[in-house]
Length: 231
Image 1 (spheres, rainbow, N blue to C red):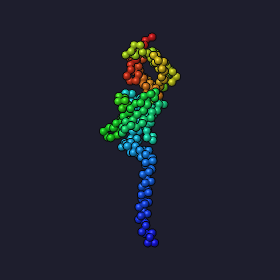
Image 2: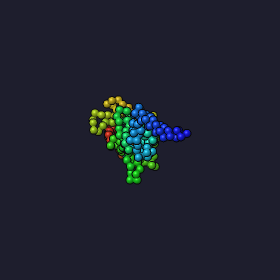
Image 3: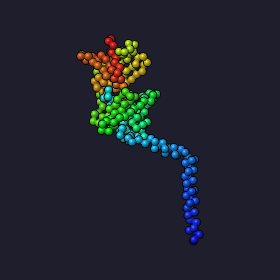
Image 4: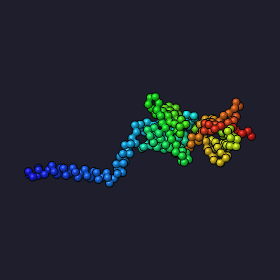
């Protein structure tokens, strides 16, 4: 019995040494484990993804809006009144990246806070501003009569380039725009009596009428003005 008590401290020392060697060998054999733990610590952010959730309207055209929700480690943006969906991957505390409508280009989206410390807006590519809204609901699709839709049909010429034309025709559900220089066609639904929106991409059309109610212009992308060609 006395011999057992005398050997016990030596046994504990050997056991501690063996356990330490085992732990060290695990990390030396599996460096990926250590790196993974390090990487997870490095990408910890103070602002939770839930703080970015909400509805964001395009500043230039409030009929266009995205509903943003958090899922796993990303944000999902769903076009309100449309089918388009984007996945935003986090790159820093407030900066995210996503692919454009064609999937060819990576775009940046940077969120910012208001004076109250709440996420309030998004700046896409440093120029397109989206504002977070609480009570305002984006414009919904409206039904126009065939006669109303037919009034928008015709050929339109780009004001900044005389050889660029659009052909717009009325359809059962809205309007069909055809780019005559490459043949691309885009469908639109009405969100007011002069505003139209593509369901898949944030591509708005806003028509202008003269004092007699005749359509004379269309503004595309909130920046390109096209004159209706008189026939």
